[in-house]
Image 1 (tube, rainbow, N blue to C red):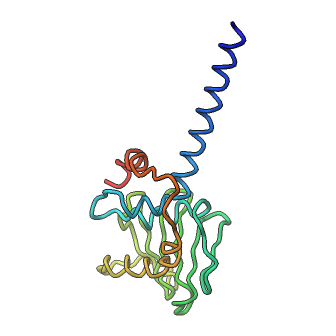
Image 2 (image 1 turned 60 degrees about the horizontal axis):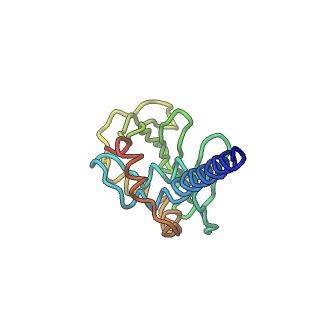
Image 3 (image 1 turned 90 degrees about the vertical axis):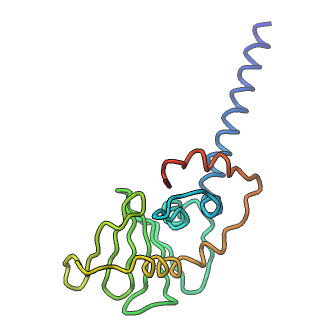
Length: 171
């Protein structure tokens, strides 16, 4: 009798661990898809945030002109729109996001995707002029759009769980 109880508990534990592992993996690898359908505040950009944050989990297509860097920061470079250099978008370990426009400006965003500062990489000084934030976000999307477009619909859709887990993050 004791063996059956122990075996039942062991099997239930294994099933729980496998289900939890699958849900975790699904939420990470399908995060861009879920972010496209999640409620969020006007300021937040869940799709951009998830592309950079989970770059090592999501499908990173082999697209001409797009390069990925997983060393330290998670960086996406788009050489298709190169100006002086390739525009790039990355996530820092500190929880901030950075967009380099390919010319000289670095835009730094906080965890909620609020613009924190703008740096000129040529002069190494902070830029104090007004920023056209919608235009900057449009440029970021242009840089990472091939990666966003390559994401597929999940086999098992856990949108409800994704929304519940991230309700405070995007609002």
